[in-house]
Image 1: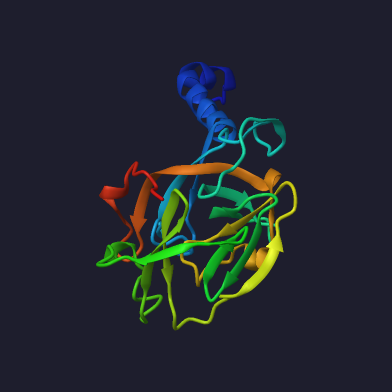
Image 2: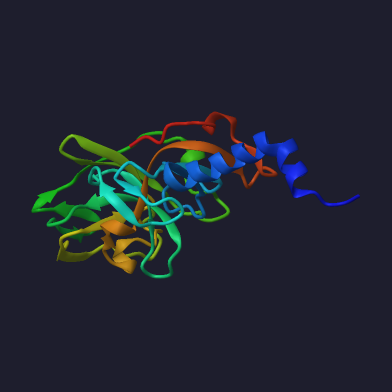
Length: 230
């Protein structure tokens, strides 16, 4: 049978246009990424596929990270995707420091612009959102970390060697400081430095779906389309 590109296109043009539209949408409007590690427990899990809104902060040239127009600025508490300056990999972390902020950490307590965060221990946390026993078998403490009206939960692992003191550091213009919510096990700005605004590629508010790596990669039904809370 002779290969006929025109006939193939004619017979499948609907499907091909659909594929092209999906590729364009993923490049320009919304993308999805696999969460590769447990650095964002208790909010994101290994196996989560997150949806990143690529126009939350900037309008970019399709298929590139070239910014055409800035439409909004990342805010403290946003969960974002960005390009790591360390190795170029796409990471998912939480924005904790804004341009001009002075950040320091003393005995794992964050201090922003001279104001200390408030902490309350979470009683009876959801065990499904804790670090799996195959990774960490020691004590896990879930805390609510609060700055004014913004609050979110973090995990502390006291028996793990971690960076619990730093700074004070002043964040330069056009840069942000990122942290993982799994505070003692995250390769974040404490190690890779401040993140340029241009390197931030999207905001995460929802999951697409999630696969349970410890249960034969079966889908976690309760996380399909779930909102990523604070």
